Image 1 (spheres, rainbow, N blue to C red):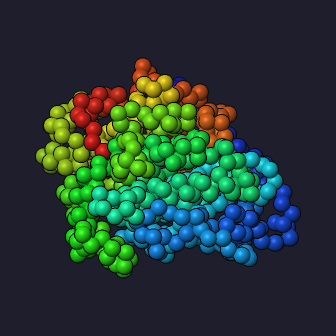
Image 2: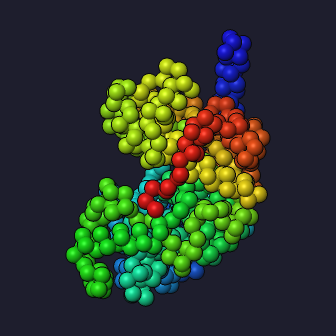
Image 3: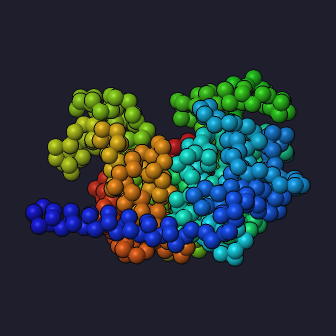
Length: 536
């Protein structure tokens, strides 16, 4: 690289930093609500189809936390969700609702967990704002929409949008497949968690106008497991028409769990509970804590870890695999953005050995973590050719990311392109300055960037000048996509949809740029190996 080129890049970067910060200040000022109740200090009250709720103000944004969108699931374990019973008076929506019971969480947990949260600039003003409906990650087993990093204030103020996050049933509570054991009331249990998402989107359809939103402009976006849930909903007839743009962030779902694999997992789980398949009624009365503890049973298909639970091809809620053998036709008209990060597996594999690897240790370590059946030595030699001087540790993370974390995203991009409804593909390359340089552009780095939440505790981006500039760019991109179905916006490269000819991919860095087929050599190496979605 010439000195002149480097100087230009440095100038471009400074311009981006200054421009992004100026855009942020302007957007915040423009989006401030004019509701006189802010000045009076009166609590905002909204009317939903089930009753009235009382919210609060947070930095000028109207916030409602813990709005009930579904009835308590405790009396109806493993059954489809029901709408809440109407209430009289005004219920407080001032604190997040409980999250679904799970193995590790510091949040309050309960089977009564069907709650959502709303951030909006104003109520009942006819604003018809785009709705950004976020689905949390944690695979299908953990997490909630109540994490600090999902706070919607900054995104709401920046884009004049309505932000919604939700809790729903997870792990066995949401995906235990009991449908093949002859109990009609459990016929939908393998996808109960997905049906919760459908119910929450129906709540948005029926109520969001009260909160200043447009029920006909709903973008679902989600990271990791949240993205996988979205990909699954794109093939669920019950979800048709409930959302109008879709963004998956390091989370794809090519195949669902087959019914026979799901049955094997259910049998292992029932055995851990001490329940016979002929006495399924017993599961209705087992303490919640015991249901959580049984999740530690070894998965019979993967052969390690706790039992995997996820969407099931049950021929009821889900009658086809999400993206197999093609992109789902019911979602052909929905603009889609599919993203991943450059260094995904640096978030999953954090043990010190991964940074101290020797060349002798690398073949065994890489074989155990790629999740595909390919000669490790072939992979190592290819990477050493492509990246002269690469260290064993860097090679390990690059190969495991390409083999197990990018494959499904590429497949979804390809299938959408083949169907003539291409997706917008992106890759985050901007590296986190935290973690002694180990984190880089790891899995989850796009959460604080897309929410414009680098200022939140726990943001893996930090809150430095570059982090804020990157967040300004990425959050504006998500807002533009929510509003129009096209991610292009001012001061941003023209983003062309993904084609099989050029494989156009937006690389988020400072500055962002559109590249054709980034990591092409790696893609071609691993596409020779059949892809099997982990857990299915």
